[in-house]
Length: 101
Image (cartoon, rainbow, N blue to C red; front, side):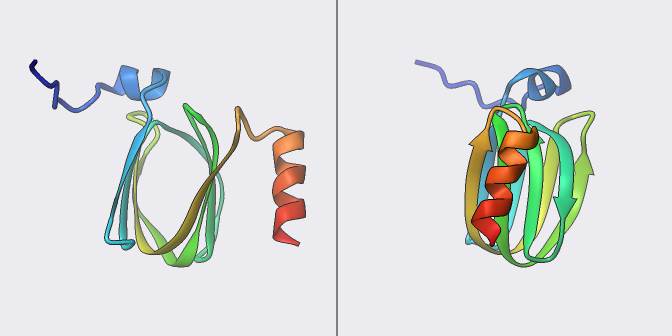
């Protein structure tokens, strides 16, 4: 069996291809980013092709962001990555607000 190791095209990344690689809790590469809703050094909230995603940690810095390709690179110390559902509508945002209280 031959494994396909090519990078996804911009169309694949925008249309549903979603994956991330976390290296040593310090470096995150994400494919499938659609929109960054909010960001701070402690949390990044974004929409991906797989739904809403909350990234929590310390000293988070978006090093690279290309929404046309759906690619995002973040450095920092990661504590958690949590999926929030299909989108970040009012329901998902209110759930996030309740979790952060």
